[in-house]
Length: 115
Length: 115
Image (cartoon, rainbow over all chains, first blue to last red; front, side, top):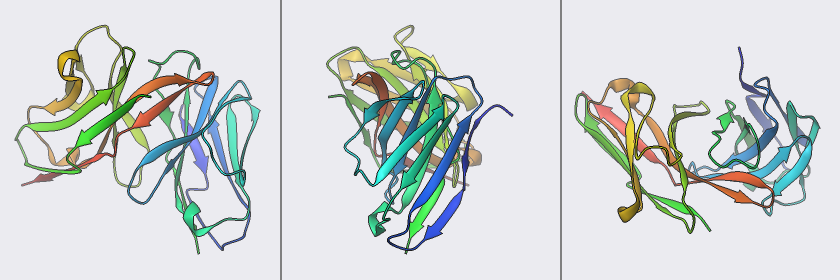
């Protein structure tokens, strides 16, 4: 199926650990995103990549480091996890970064719980 | 900066009744507006989008929304609610920032459908 996929779906870890979330899209899009949904379901963009180049970085702590090995993949690495990092992280993709009316397609989300 | 406001964090309707979910936007440029739906433990799915081609936009699952510039509104409606419509609904505006697009979401409206 064509889609945006994320692994893992659930991630439970201890404070201070380092973890990664992987995202892949097979829609042929050139732009990918990471969004964070907090416990009140508020969604906020974190990063955006276009053809492996970082184009949006929304004042996210530098413990969060996105990496895009190619335009179909965007991974999120988080160092020194904190309790406040507990959230659902969504990956998304779209065509053409400079076109505001292009819809974004979302992955199923990764629920991160930091204990 | 662009923003959207969703009035009513929780809306409850009877099955078969009209669904009305409110969204007002703030934008200094003509906005591109979206409605997404999130079913429990799933990612976001696009319902419909406004791209200035037509003020009345029809989406999936019988939903539609009307763009009203004079009221800065983009309310979502469905003539007859079904139990399967119970979900979280997000209004969003797309904007160009720092070389890329980002979706700015409202706080969401939880729709409950009762028998």
